[in-house]
Image 1 (cartoon, rainbow, N blue to C red):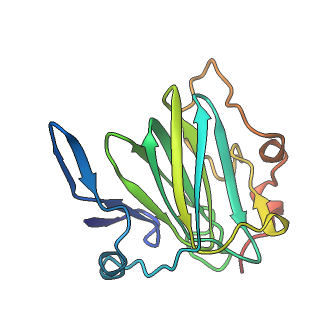
Image 2 (cartoon, helix red, strand yellow):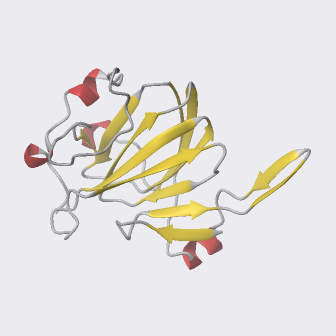
Length: 182
């Protein structure tokens, strides 16, 4: 496994070793000792799986009082995955990184607590799975608008189309007005 830091050093792309032949493939998606050696020491308590069709945009989500670290990956399809530093005291506050995750590249992304997360579906459909370090707590969930001009995220959305977002995501806060981490 390779652990590749991004422009946000706490956010790490995980490139697993994939062993394949004519029968299919095998890869490790979680190995506590290897992840600890790679700088990710996480204890996961919940696994989630979402399916979305092309053009769906989810996020940017985070939990304020019970922040979640997430190890995310795509098992079917392709997404553009985005992580935003929401720690006000961080010198990288408001900076983002975007990574393509797909069933072909088998990459995973570590999104640490204190960061917002979202993704845009590039393929006809995508199955997105992730491990969380804390339980989902809807009363603590917050959302930053995906199209916040302060963030200026370069989403790969075709110019002739608007992404499909939930009502909750459409009503997300602007970064300058949002409750964020200290």
